[in-house]
Structure formats: C-alpha cells, structure tokens
Image 1 (cartoon, rainbow, N blue to C red):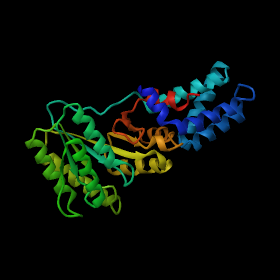
Image 2 (image 1 turned 30 degrees about the vertical axis):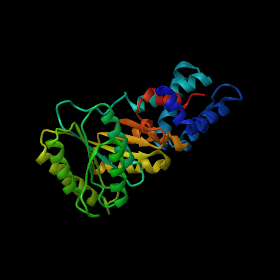
Image 3 (image 1 turned 45 degrees about the vertical axis):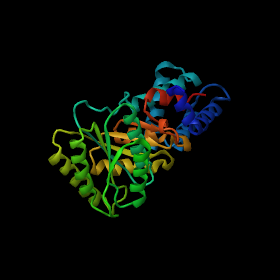
Amino acid sequence: MGLFDAFKRGLDKTRKFFGGGFTKLAAMTGHFDEDQLDELEELMVRADCGVEASMDIIDHVKADIKKSGDNSKEAVLNSVKTRMKEILGPKSTYEIEEGKLNILLLVGVNGTGKTTTAGKLAARYKAEGKKVIIAAADTFRAAAVEQIKAWGEKTGTTVISQGSDGSDPAAVVYDSVHAALARKADILIVDTAGRLHNKKNLMDELGKIKRIIAREAPDSIVKSMLIIDATTGQNGVLQAQSFSEVVDLDYLGVTKLDGSAKGGVIIAVAYTCKVPVVLAGLGEGVDDLVDFDPDIFVESLITE
C-alpha cells in the first residue's frame, strides 16, 4: 500500500465528514456564496482544524475569489488545499545523524500513544540496521515500563529501566546514556513521564534530564518530539501549547488518526505551534507509524 492510500485509509472518518460536508454545501449551485463560505468555515472547525486556522483559510479563499472571480467548487477546494499546505509547511522528517549518538526525547500526556510510538520507532530503526536503546523514563506509571519492556522483547531492543516504581527518571536517563555510549548506539529513545503535577514539575524534570544528557553526552544530538492523540481534538492543541511553554519542541507526532473524525487537529496544531509534524499514526500495526507528508495528508484529507 502506497503512502497516499495509507493516509486515505487512516483518515477515512475525517475525510468522509469533511468531504461529505463540502460536497453537500456545493451541491445546490456548484458555487460558494458568503453564507456557504461561512458554513465551510464552521465545517472545518467541527473537523477540529481550529477556529483561528479555519478563519485564516476562509480569509484566503475569499481573497482568491476576489482576485479571480471564480467561486466554483473546484476553485474553492483548490484554495483550501493550498492554504492548508502552506500552514503545514514543507515536509520535514526526523533523521538520525550518522556517527553520533542521537537522543530523542518523547514527551506528552499519558494516553497519547507515546510509549507505543517509542516501540514502533525502535522497530523501524532496528529494521534499518541501527543500534537502538530505549530509556524507560516514565517511571511514575508502572504500566508504561512494562509496555516498553514488551516492545523491547518484540523488537530485540535493549530497554534500560530501574527496579522500583517511582524511581528517579533522570537516573534512568543517566544509566541509558552511558549504556548507549558504551554500546555505540545510533539512537537512544527516551520515553518520558506523561503526567507530572504542574508545569514547574514538568520543567524541572525535563530540565534535569537535559542537564544530565549535556553533561554525560555533550556531543550527542538531542531532539524533543511531542506526541498528541488526534482523537482528543482541541485538547491536543492545548497540550501542544502547554508543552511548548516548558520544552523546546523540535517535532510533533500525531497518533490515532485512524480512530477519529478529527484529523483536522493537525492543521490546528501546526497553525498554533509552528512546529513541524513528522510522524503520523494511521493504525495499530508497527508499519502504521509513517513519516508525515503535508501534501499527501491534505490531498487524502479532502479527496472526494
């Protein structure tokens, strides 16, 4: 299955909601007047594209209509697609730098699929012949440690953890960094805690982890990726805003796109946070975690 087909399948619920609504709006005359454009804006908001992003897109549609005089269904659809692609920006990917220890900090609230993403990434890089280590640093949730250990067994990946629940996440990262250096690993994937009491605790914990990495592996390439769950809709946007206030985010990954009619949340997050989306979870399988492609996403999102 090609990437377009994978996105089209994964976004089936969102596409049917958005595409069906779009076709219904244009069915009467094949053209969009002011009222229909207002309804189109409402449709995008309901698909969780976000109020600000939806208003922005419709403003661009209206400007295009004013410039060209063409308010046909095809022209409006093309205008929507063009602006969505501009909001998402060019395709960006997370790439491992050869000859260096690459450390990827996965952050996000519990339940977003963060631990599963860590396991799937490990499987991907192992399949590419990379040396991978996972740090089970979400020590506040015993289930997360057990889950990541299961992924380690499944993929043949070394998982570094500590014996007791509630142990110090930074200590796990310390051990993991030294294990990764000793074994000349290509990538260390750090599954961080998904729930701390407040932003200060989160900042302190992640700050401690980063200081340890900077001290123990100063030549490593460190990146942070926020994982959000598409089914949470606008809560995903709020999570992105909250984490961006305490973490220097480099990338975003969006999971569970296949289980939601709210795939437009990717547009909302990209518009709000200006951080590139690099991963998309389109299903339960290991291969259903794919590199995000803005053009393919938009085309599959609103293809009839």
